Length: 496
Image 1 (cartoon, one colour):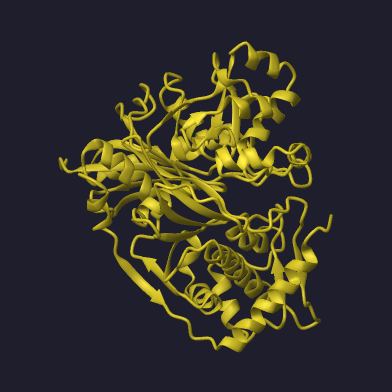
Image 2 (image 1 turned 45 degrees about the horizontal axis):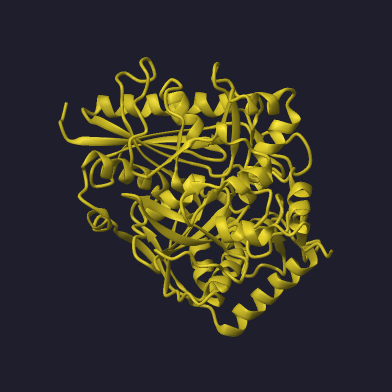
């Protein structure tokens, strides 16, 4: 077995769990992935069975470690990245969740958030957390579980329950219940962390009715999160890096300098811009968040969040049966010369930035008798580009300049989509050689703590461009497409 150190990255996503073993150069040595069921109890509700999450994480991690061992590679540490905001509550004694995980897409706490907004609390929440008042974030989800599971609130107030985001739950399980910790990026997505001073905020805890006793300790992104318990893997491994998926992707894309920008295309789409040591308060519907925290020093980010990107392709596959796999959409989109006037507004879980309308629902516009599989596939892909344009327009309106966009995530394998994006955004789009940047970012964080890298500059030197896509669409044609999108969105928005 080689003595060269490798890192296991656990990437727990919205629709699947993945484990990847990376070498020091960021090359993939082993890879395993497993999907798990989505649960939709009611309209606008989305849940996951926590045991599905745990079992798939264990399975893919053991698979990847076995592959690495067979190749003679030594894994020395674990990095974790995860779907953010998704929330669990579990019993401290048994480690068993008291309810399904409430997923970030879930809209069940819309009325609670609206009531807090109408009571005038949003300005305070935005000033302290950088977030808008929306069911997207974790605080109202925790409160809902405590209020809707019999005896839960009394148990929480007695200190018997623990809660947190997926990273927190995985750390608890991996360490055999010895460590209840989260990192600063995941904590910044709960609406309970004051991102100015980096601590849980008592006023916010009171406002959302969340007892402080159940919250995790907030650590740096590269930090000591304990060691895996006996029997989890072949040997105990230290957990040394943690970040929410979008922040991890930013690190994987080497977004360490102010103004660096990336967009990740998975279930949803998330654009993050490094804003340095300053929290920028967006005036155009974007969020302020913690980009990463290393050595107790925070780097902030401005973020635009789209709830549905790749999930629209899954909808074509699973609910409509139009395609058998995502790769088919590229050929279908190419097969027609225009979009035929068909637009999909994929507000299946409401609209995120810059609209923030949890009540909105998805709609398809411009259908004619001739609109078929190709028009649907093309509309689903183009919706990703249009929504990204909405985010970049808001970023520019906030005074942040953009000269190119680094992209990653499962959807960037589709070259037609990236060329369409370059045309619609009128911007150079750059795809990296290593596209699994979310897992890579988690590996880099663990590698920093393990001493594989001296600093972030050494990590940045490893980033390599694969393919760039430049705009080729005329201004009038671009404007016509964007106007069609604006008309479709305006017809989807809920008027109060």
